[in-house]
Length: 494
Image (tube, rainbow, N blue to C red; front, side, top):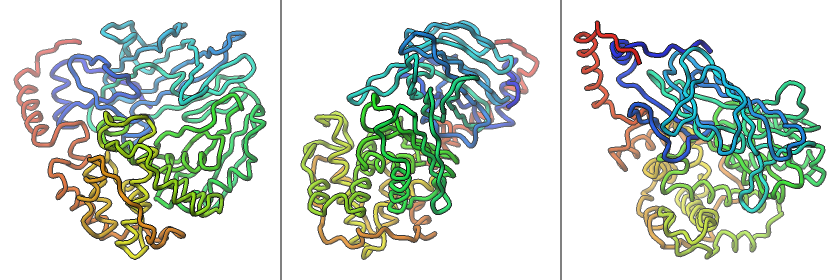
């Protein structure tokens, strides 16, 4: 990382705009809803852990240490390494946090607590209550003896940053302060004695982090075998180099969490049934980002429905789920009256898990019938993973049609955009073995043409990387050129 260089004048900004890119972009990492904007800029929301070409622009390291005799609280030192492409940074600390020190940050208003002073790297140290209850139980806690800390429980409430040129990317990770025993990754940190085991299967490393307090967790070798078997059933492209699974202490709720992430390291925590591990593994085998927010307005059902369906397939193939129970599960009527694309129709948050799983199962069967069992929903997932930018509904439809080699838009519109419920054909071939071969290059070409045909306005990510299409950006560039000549001698400091 290099020291950041803030803009010094309007003219300098305009020249940089002309030389580096058609427009100034901005991004927000884990910013809360209704986050204020600096000087009228419009940051592009970025999925946590995903986005950008590399980690060269903004690297955030949350260094953790326990607070003596203060159960539930943890000390966090957030350190920022910023490249020259970063122009501004604004942050808000978590509610109830007490700030102990800052460096390279100035007090701010307008909904933010601090702004970067533009003079190099920066840091802030604060103490926050890390106890979090969600999804029916305890997900994160710091105690005097041990801690299980999920990233969302300790990170900043808002972190907005602006940059010049193309998105330089961002990354964030957890770390333990010097002298603190435990283990820390991108999303989870464990304070206290742990045992870390690594095993390789088919060229991939599975890492199991077992806290000493995780007495009731599954045996390490069983966890590794389960993940490897699940991967065999879900060959969807880049797996990274290492998959880490953290086994929580018994006090943490049953279930798991995973973050969509590109790069060599993939991470999840899970405990409970074998299906939980398979479900979370599907999430860390997703490298595409849904458009229009964290989940996309009509696509969350796909993420959870796919994870539920694939977990059931893994259980079926392992002999842990009888065929009649598998059939009963994927044909459930739970949430049947909901419209998957319209969250306002969901009677409960379980709709994407229940009706979503049924639609995914039916879609898998339809693809298998159309291709004589040679392809299935896994191939759709692989195509989506191969895309560099965000994925919207039109992209999904195009991927399905490329894999099935037949029109599927009408079928998908009926069961995604209305409250209709699909049947799940019993005679779909090939369920006992996923196709080994990836989609052909012809399919990739069909996917590209399918996107254009399905939605002419759905420009590629390269054309809309900062939310403005190239024709508009070209006008901005011309205006910038004119202004830089006309006002090049005017210097207005910010």
